[in-house]
Image 1 (cartoon, rainbow, N blue to C red):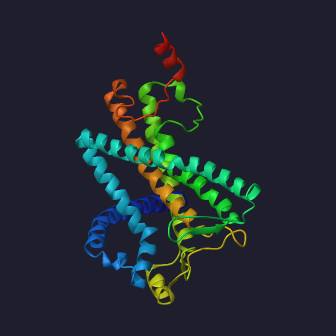
Image 2 (tube, helix red, strand yellow):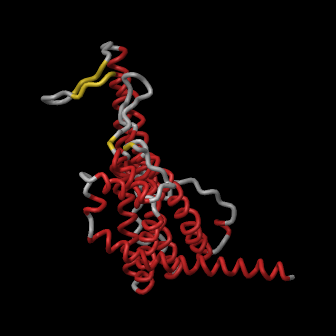
Image 3 (cartoon, rainbow, N blue to C red):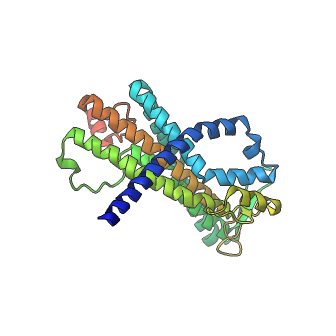
Length: 311
């Protein structure tokens, strides 16, 4: 019994310490944010090697996480008080996803056109390279252009992901969702955005952030490095941007894929906020607010339209 009491006491003590630490980090987030915007040269002046290392550290740090988390809490509190603010946030974030998706979806067309050009240059004109431009031409080997096609695919996947989510285009595994009531669906959506979308976005961000920087600078930073250690490493810092292709004359900008991975995580996190707010507002306002302000692309039925004009 005594051992059980000690175990329970330790458990409650750890929970209490965790709660205190949570509120301490939230309180410190206001100070950290204020200090960052009032001293931008400490992390944005990249002529200073220490500023680069500070940027690397804070981008994947606990401090940055709590600044974002606290901003989310503050915005949510204001939105609960003024639902118009929450709707405005939904419209802005969904508009961001739609705008990026509609623009970068054209990368799919560029990918097809470039592949056609590559085939023509290889099979018909038997050219080993492709050159285009005005004044100073842009000239690379055929293999460079062939491998560069992967970049278009990466643009579509990473920057159109949230667009597809806004458009309700992702596959949803439905076990109980269709059988429950409208308000229960909104609760499920809120739960999913808070406990699935946001944590996954944060987790991938933590890995991809340092993964990206390890292909941009040396000495290579690590997620376990404290700020003091990174500042010490900054003495030997130099840019070492990844330019190695899979073939001797292949694509030389694979670092762009790492940057796109980080951008994708940020967009997923922002869309999770928008989805949580939309689900809450639709739950609160009822079925008449379902898909309110939702900007969904609709393909017109050309056949029916032609028949209508013919009639």
